[in-house]
Image: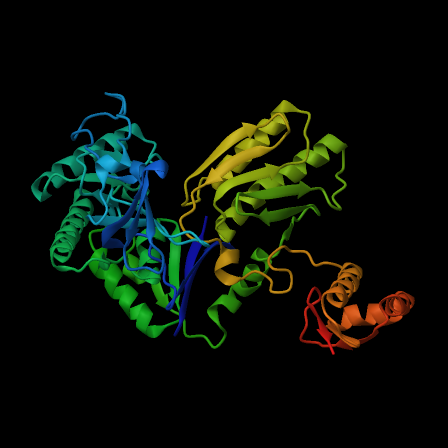
Length: 500
């Protein structure tokens, strides 16, 4: 599978696209005025302890106080080499035993502020590098579940344990990218992470409350650090300055590569073409399609995505696909294609939390197993953690996808001012009868000889044309003269009744 990473830089916005076999799979956006804070470490102060929620609100210098749950507060962990199954997990202590109001606490952001909610925090600090994640408050070495070879898992665990000893014996998570890497590459990462943690310690001692003491890399550098894999053919950057920074970063930060791999710095190219880089790859069109509610399938079927506060639902429909054999085969083929498309769309749209997929009903148990297997296989390349459950008795597939930042739609869009985010508008007929009721209410409350109603052109047109007889009856009943005025600035549901 061929993969490319495209970096588009403008003065106020940076976008990174991951393209696999010519198709956009992921889009990451960072804007200068709203850069994400996930991964940042702050020196905070406990603002309020909430025993009923087993949580506390912590002031870290953001617009809203951040949320810290008792489960996310660091407690003693097993010593190095101990297995998590050796002893049962201790119950979570009361939040009042862990924190007090006014206490200084070092915290890390694990979720950006989303909607009306503040950032989510943890005191279980972690700092990532290319191959490892440092866990400075632990002594456990864990291996990514995506490294499946048992010999390689044992080699990496022994190697990291040995290399970490001279640097404080901290705990580490070995990332998927570490598979097959030599000791030199891992040693360089451990040295880098040890320096980074020492610097955090110095800043914590000196910084004021609410200060950021560690900030994650900028988006282009995070992309090179986190997204570069063996199957990445190149990274194309349309900014000369960013290109040079990335080359320097890759050469310095990732110099200890195995001899079998290409030099990563050499894979980074500067794109200087006249045509915008995202237009060249059709990325802009893909982004527009990713904001649409419907997704068309090649077979003629289609998906419908609905994102709500509680969950995201995906409805699968056959559409115009008629198949060639029988209904069951048609449904099966549509569901197989839909499973692959759903996995891609979740990743592209960055949809997280609970996801409910309503596949078309299948009677064959083997067909259901194959569709579920296709979905799981298609999700395997997703960087976010996913969990897929079997078909429910109602034929629904429930799954979860870890959410750390806003979805693509909520990053790029805002609620419709016309409908207030409902996705629906009251009809002109409904608004007409609301106007009539408001006229009656106003006349009963206030004394006026005449009334002026200002509304949208569509509503006024309907009142003066189709409801003219009703208006005449209302004027006679109230004994008042009513005049209607269309104003293009008024939205369909908006109107004013003015007493003259």
